[in-house]
Length: 106
Image (cartoon, rainbow, N blue to C red; front, side, top):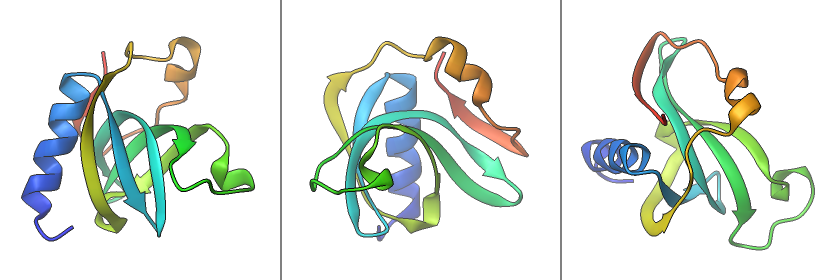
């Protein structure tokens, strides 16, 4: 993504408004819920609940579930119109320890 500020704004907006995002990460197009966004071990990261691979990927990487993305490796991010309910209940407890937390789904 050419403008880190634009990505930062999109992630914060998507989390605040509980909107799904479509990201290209390490060459794969993924759709899911952005949950936590912050700095962990000095690196900006996004805790993402993957709902599906938009490119029909296979194997473990195509499975739904939690992913931790390095923000600098997100090539594209589109905020979708579709919303999600928010925290995933018990799985919310699996959230990580952050050096600094910018945004978290309530």
